[in-house]
Amino acid sequence: MNYPSVKRISECLSVENAIAKQIRGIMDGSTDPLTVGTKASQYVKDCFNRPDQHVVKLYAIDELCETYGVEGFGSVYGTADYCNTGDSYTPTVLYFSHSRRFRIGCQGDYVKSSKN
Image 1: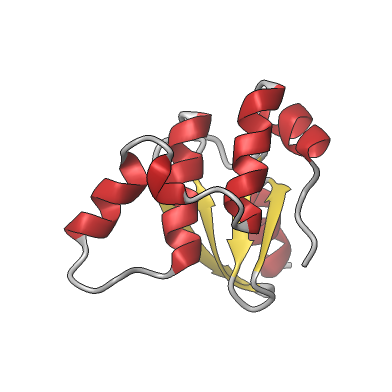
Image 2: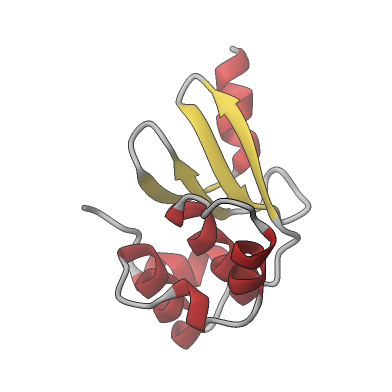
């Protein structure tokens, strides 16, 4: 499976290379999201049933990127979850359920294109 490169993550999300490597590791499964900070493990504890793994990963990435939680939306591309930056046109980490892929992009671009 393809994942964004460490370089792309670092550049687009304006994070240090070490953080970008952790984010990439969370995406590809080489880093356990429950060992990164506390948001992901707290989210799992708060859920009655075990949440989807991609959402747990997004909570860990949310903590690393210091964003404002995990949100979701629907578009012509299917449903997606993302780390909320507070600005629809600031690059963030998105996960598209239909393709089961992580992407770096702007949530607003995907929502806007689905309305055209």
